[in-house]
Length: 468
Image (cartoon, rainbow, N blue to C red; front, top):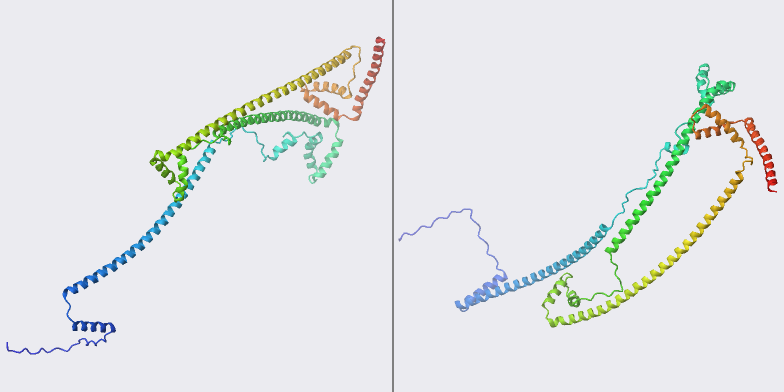
């Protein structure tokens, strides 16, 4: 063991450089000085060290607890703020729900009213005139028949002769050809014109028949439509009046009119209590829906002594209501009796008016009867005068004399002719007569009138002689 260990040669490699000595800071210097002073001071016992450690840990725990308490307080304040915000939001929601509920109730009431209302649905409709009438319909109304007027004999002859003149004069214009035909028509004899005139008269007769028929039909249809309109209008009016009466009855059943003079029904003891408590509960920021629940529970838990003042008040109100109702009913009975008297008086007046009207009507009827009787007497007197066989008859006019002759000729020419067409043809022939022909009939009528006057003079003389 006496062998000495040779020192190991250390290799010089790339080792780290030696760190420089740090200059101690002020704090480190103070700590080092404290340590030196402690080391230089008297030595501390282990029990005192433990106490100091406990004290330090207790102080740390206290600090931690204080921090935690502070944090808890902050959290509590935040939660209270959140709860307040939630309460406000809930109150707003409750108010919104209440307002919505009220609106829904109003809407339901309105819907029920609308459902109860009935629509007037008539079983018939009035005929409506259309504005967009066609031109043809308007022409029919203005001009009458769709059938064209018959063309006169000259036009019929011109249609036949047109092609012949066009063949001889192809280059002639419309005006020239019409002038040539007019000149030629003047040279045509009466025998050549006769077939065209007969054709014209036949067409004219048929045209007049059609027009008379259409006029009669249109007049009948117009009268029928007017009568139908009046009937439908009256039926619609009756239906509407009946519908109105039914609707009024239903509204009277549904809506009972409240009399403002009628005394109100008194409240019960419970409702008197709730009226007293409502204001206090609402002042405590209680919800409108919560108030009835709270008051109901409070009323249940109340003793008989607590309820007694409200019950006594309700009893007094009930007695007062009974007295007021008796007075109200008595007043109503008096009003009903007064109304009955007024109705009876009104009915008496109406009966008197009706009797006066009846008397007036009877007077007018008697006057009408007397006038009718007088007229009949006058007619009889006239008939008695006219019934004298010796009295000369008044002669017919020139037109009647002509129509007698014309009727005979037309009936011979056209057997089975209608009376209306016959009259129309006679009047047309009378209009178409020349002045010379008409003068002949006028002279015959004047001669007959002169003879009639002479006869009347002689007749009157004979009557006067008889009376003398």
